[in-house]
Length: 331
Image (cartoon, rainbow, N blue to C red; front, side, top):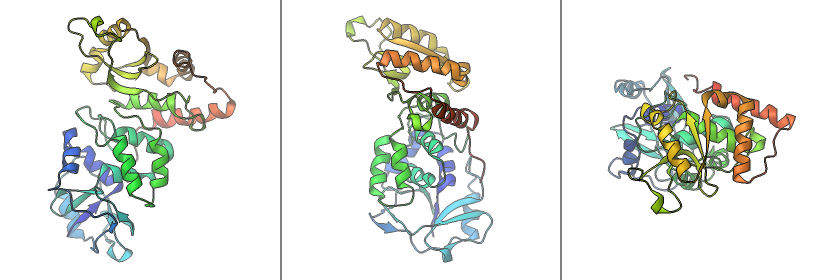
């Protein structure tokens, strides 16, 4: 018998992985991924206390109880206080579950995103999407972890799954949130900065174009490369406008990234980029944040239509959600 771990519990399982590549490796390994036909519902199985205790005995880091699981109908629910059963009659496309152990299937990162769309407000859902497409773990359910080398999923894979999921609950909200996710974030504060700057006005953002994140920046002419400066990665970069934003802090960056900030900024300036620096203090101060947005607006050549009282109220809400509430409460 298999238990289908889902929702916040599945996210906790993914966040417990010590190597970021493990998520994608398991998800793509046909030997560990069940043969899930398109349009197949959950099997008729009942979750028992023994099943839950078996998972509890594995001592998975970050996994909290009660355990959230999927069941096909009300009769399959567990009466144990160690489980929260989500009844689902949906059909699940291929790639919905990953078999992590005998008798234990976990919602894939893509399915988690759709499932959490039914539980999270839009801003929190967008932030979760950044986490799943980033390399700093899943702070929504655990602490930030800078040991991940690869993301759990990609924006493209999320999009394909949402389309394949059809009318599954959560797909409408997930599809809307997907438009605002930029891949490649390496820290919670980088995610906050992109959301604050780029979300639409109706959500409290400045509606600036989305940047590329932690991408290599090259000079216009390769002949300008200095010895030893073959690679330079930037936190946020708008390549066409030759604009880069660097976040200066060791609080959310790893030690190595913080130590390289000054050298990287010099390289960017030498390569013809305008570099805008943001600190934790300026990110938390709305007056300073306005100044940063105005500089970017000018350099990007876009019109900034903010400042109305109604927009400022929405900005306060967005700012508070991103910078004050970093984690979900335990279930």
